[in-house]
Amino acid sequence: MARKPLIAGNWKMNLNHLEAIGVTQKLAFALPGKYFDVVDVAVLPPFTDLRSVQTLVDADSMPITYGGQDLSPEDSGAFTGDVSGAMLAKLGCTWVVVGHSERRTIHGEDDELVNRKVRAALRHGITPILCLGEGEDVRDAGEHVGHCTAQLDAALKGLSADEVAKVVVAYEPVWAIGTGKSAGVADAQEVCHALRERVREVHGGPVADGLRILYGGSVKSNNVGDLVKSDDVDGALVGGASLDPEGFAELCALAAGGPLP
Ligand SMILES: O=C[C@H](O)COP(=O)(O)O
Image (cartoon, rainbow, N blue to C red; front, side, top):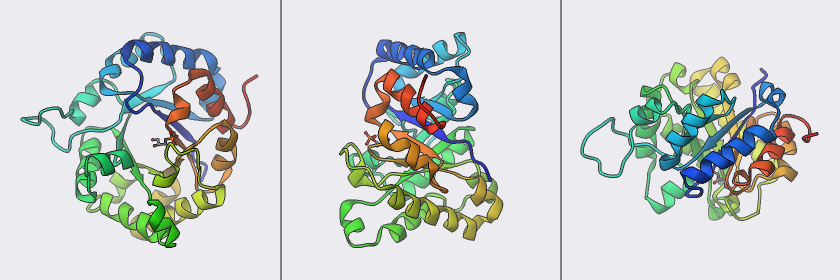
């Protein structure tokens, strides 16, 4: 089944709302409309930027989608500092990152919380981009496939096949994030394939064949083309390389099959 690639730029804690406007404008300007027929392009700014990005995207009818980098597992109430799925939905978010390794490591998020956040996103009609991946020690021990499929099982626990069909999975080996050390194409394909086969086993062929599985970890213009050519890699979650709009536009074009004119 042909799956349209998704290239999502995770800005992490970079760019204030004024800078966000500039970067989003430049990205839309640099990437001709025809590329959006072939690849979906998203930006994932900090919460404080979302309203500005929404206003710009709506006003200029940009083909760019956007989303948050995290959400609360709860819908409202006394949860100081948290942002709910309902709030993100109201801001027109298509996506929300869940279970990023920086949240798992820095904020101690475990699989059970990640599962609750996936459910919260789906409850509000937002597509969770569910991140998972192994650390260097697990990879060195050769246990990366089992580790990642176990994380997948835990994050999707109790979800119906229809719900799983609405999830995007992002395989991000922790040792490749922000290190300049990207997984090889064969390594990315190995884990993405195993994740798809696990979904096939539990939720059936149509869900597995339709599921978008991204790779993330030091994705740049020089490796994105080969990564998305892999059978089971359907796009990329891009960190550092998404902050420069012209460079990110080039990366998106390469994911769509060729460089910008
Ligand atoms: O969410 C994005 C990933 O953490 C990858 O970040 P990176 O492209 O800077 O390595």
